[in-house]
Length: 310
Length: 299
Image (cartoon, rainbow over all chains, first blue to last red; front, side, top):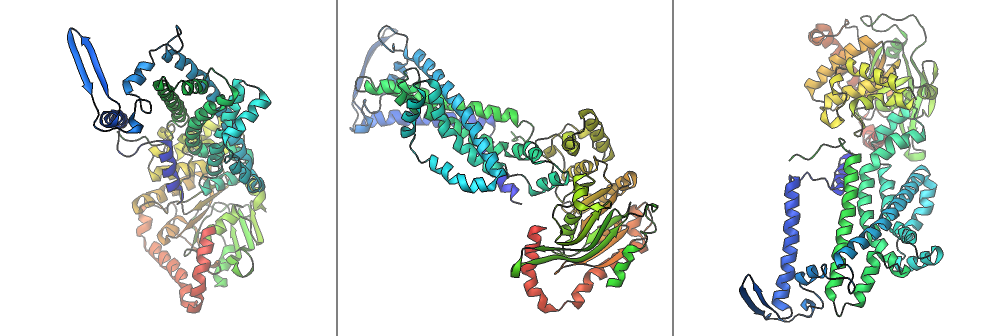
């Protein structure tokens, strides 16, 4: 009977919707939230930001507009919260004098960081799954080592990253390892649950068929664990992007989003919108990466669950 | 009550399949018991079980919740070991028979693997025993034909109704062509109409496969309709209180359920079941509930 809530929670984590929202409806809901957020951003600027004006001529019409916000909030100043149009405009500016535009640099940096995050996720997921399999197979080891696995996650990544870079050099592979350090943990936790999640009678069935431990693992435990593993991989995918960006900081690698952020922070006083532009790129990268994992989930588990009725 | 039990050594129900001459019983249980836990909290789930089941018999185990009927089925299948006594299947210790894949099992739930299509679910036992792919496919289709579901071979379990899923589970249990089929309340979760139809289908499958069946149920009509012999059990500790031969003619059909003899046998089983209530002192009930809950947890 415990199977039903387990499946329900796994379904929630998988991101499957049975709430009655169709896929199109869900996309519309997300769009409404994003637009609402952007509108709120500019409303705050309108009420408490810095004054601004437009003197321009479009198609022969002269536009002269000056805006003086009624209030003055420090958080809404142009330095703290640049206008959306300044941030969007930043993408078109050259990254360095006479250099390529920012959007082009950011795409290159995103791909560089994506490679680190991807390799980090693969290493972390493999390590996490391996740990889960070993712990489920040998309960003694689980009791002995799981506390250390948990403790490993309380060590700040900032302290691990320089050590890895000192040991292995300032390479993108070092950064991938740093990302892996963040990604293995959710997978291990999910594997510990998922590998034991199958119906107890399914284990009896395997026993009745004189299945070996290896057969039970491949034919029952792992397939039963995939919903758990994929929900963990979604968490790990976004953690991997964060790990890769943070890992780039002590290694001084300039090619990724981390290097870009360091640079933007240095020039924040003169151009705050650049940091926001990079930040948005990092968020998009994270979403794309999580989306790719979701796509893999759909591919691997196709046919397995009743699809949501639309 | 022991004098009724002695009927276990007599020939099978008269109307049943022609008794085969091989003397060796398919299942032979002597002095078997099962104790869960130890010390003062130990629960005697089964005590002093003697039971012998010959080839082609259809034996139902019936009794109240917590009487250990599912536990007894699991002893036969070596899914849990007996605490004392001996359990033999096909003349071998239960463990050896299990390792030799000599029985199939069906549970109350279909327990189909949701990530496999129907045919690959049926193939599973053959896959585990390492049979070649071509043979697996052929056997699986043959079994799906037997349960009349071959057109659903490429569907996933969620696309089938509960009764259909249970038929797939039966096909999976029979795919290794076992001499013995263990069934643990297989139709308990189905509605009454589906259950009766499944009963008839199980009868026709049984006639065609020459399998020996041990069938756990708590439905008296189901036990009488299906069985050549009904083993009545009681709880605290779980033990066999009587064995009733069912001499209804084969094949069992819709008319069987309306025959005079059928009602007589249903009444006989019902009285055997309630026998315990008459001679059980009320004082034993109080601590019995705790024991029953514990035993059920394991069952």
